[in-house]
Amino acid sequence: MSTCTQFNVAKNDFQNIALRQMALPRLDELSDDCLLVEVERFAFTANNITYAMLGDVMKYWQLFRAPEGLGNIPVWGFGRVIASMHPQIAEGERLFGYFPMASHLVIEAADVSKRGLRDGAAHRQGVAPVYNAYARVTGDPAFAGRNGDYQALLRPLFMLSFLVDDFLAEEEFFGARTVILSSASSKTAFGLAHLLHSKRKPIRVIGLTSTGNADFVRSLGCYDDVVLYDHIDSLPADQPVAFVDMAGNADLRGRLHRHVGDKLVYSGRVGLTHQDAAVDEELPGAKPSWFFAPDQIRKRAKEWGPGGIDTRFNAAWSGFVPLLEQSLAIVESRGAVAVETIYRDTLAGQVPPDQGHILSLVDG
Image 1: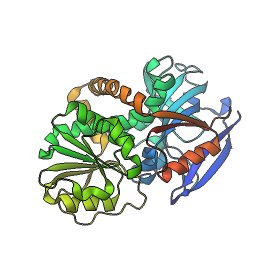
Image 2: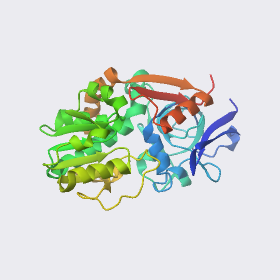
Image 3: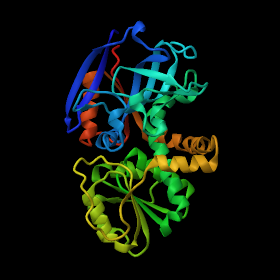
Image 4: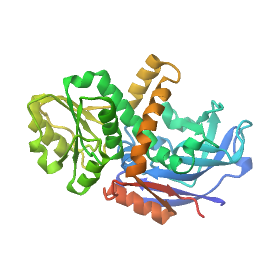
């Protein structure tokens, strides 16, 4: 392949898509230490819509270049090195990390070690280090086959679940013994529910969801109760509760705050997939606040020391995989048309919760 395909969206209108074809750089055009990587496969979930929604605020748009007014939504996936100008990295190596929705990426390899590297490109600096890091996973069974698909789909989301669980436990749940999760069918939500249910007894976990997703949420077995969005008024309002908002639906958040009132001791915002999300009015109960994962990572990295986060996370991940195997069907699609279809379905909230989509813009 001599060309690269990029899937761009208009920053001011996510319905507006621009597919671009560009020539790949020749070997003599690659600078020292650069890698030309073919983006073999990547996951796409509602979390990627969150990246787009927060593209300017969180600097996601600056990670992968696009023409003025357009953006390239970051995705987690796998790439294969097809040309290397770095003496320690061979062609054919497989990398796991943050990629553009594209068929190829040029990486300026820096801080190369046996385990990984980072992209040292100037425009990719000034963001959380995790967004520039690539793991070298050639031959690693944890990143091969279906295990690799789970990693791409859920590892970044489950890391967020893991960090929220750790934060809530450290804060002793702000005095609450009930945690309410919105978008209970979302992958980040049921990852958090799994951790709370399995590790934090006697904390009670309530999932808020739509009628269409209720059966799936109940089937997961990690929620003590499942409540439909239309039935929020049935929730108990006489004891302290903590709320973790995965969707950013201002109307839902307002209804819950007004129902629970001062008994709502924590209101944390984790995701933002509703494009009509509004600025919060003055609400009773705890003031809604953003949970920022890199802050918790920095804190725990200092307290737990080298490898402390990875050791704890990997143990939690091992306990989570069986739930994925019984509840998630992997759907693989290839080509620009298929990618656009899944993108639009995800944007519209029409992807069934028991599906995980793995995509590719590479031909063949």
